[in-house]
Length: 111
Image (cartoon, rainbow, N blue to C red):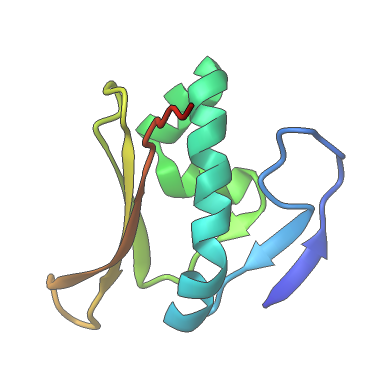
């Protein structure tokens, strides 16, 4: 994973340094933790929620997370209580896509 130092320290930052995920293995290893932070931030930051729902990849890139060209995100159920982010991989020279994984916000209470 190639990293570049981020300019501003921010309590809501998704990553401390720019992260360049080069392949599926790196995406599966690092992106779930990052997207967990995305879901948490969506819950508390209306502006971030709006940006992410309109352009998930662009919002990640603006926040220092860069995906391989053959990977993309779908933000499903953006207005629901349990939004879901699905990561897909496009096959070369094809419209075929494969779901790599997804994360969904789930609220749990315990006693």
